[in-house]
Length: 201
Image (tube, rainbow, N blue to C red; front, side, top):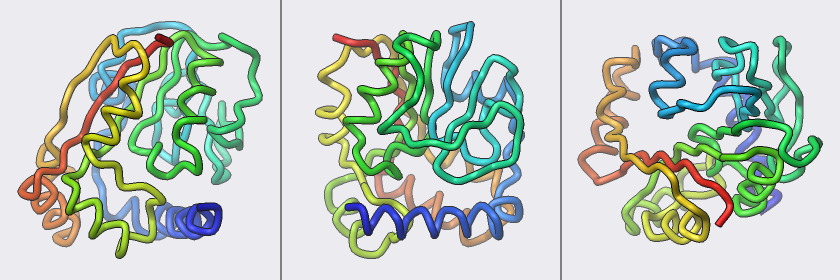
């Protein structure tokens, strides 16, 4: 998994540097992220796998963390599997569309719950056959979780909020015909975005 993760990180860095700004026109803002992730919590927060355009850019109470270096305020370079913060340092933590990029998803979840009172996730769930195909051809994601795998991954915790998100809702946010086709096919093939708010069981 380490070699696959390293390759995925190289692809992710290249995507962010060369393609992300051209492909997407998402109206990122504090309101966008809080509405999208259904965040009602206040206080200090940690955004794991924050990327270039995460909530930490727009909210002074949010610290961003990512293995890829971004020269921005409130950013810390690090790994979700090893969060260098004391227990319960944050009111909540979040990880948007990134736990499938991690080396050890279960360890990331445990670390996020260690350093915060609640952890919030958004992740894609795939039909089994779609996950099997993507695991062969998609080099940018170490994991392609099936819906059952997500239920098992998050079901061991106290799920205090749950919602679904059809990928087609983002079709108007992309400038790329290829990305529009991808989003359309994801919806047709039954790929679903899931939002989990969890606490320790």
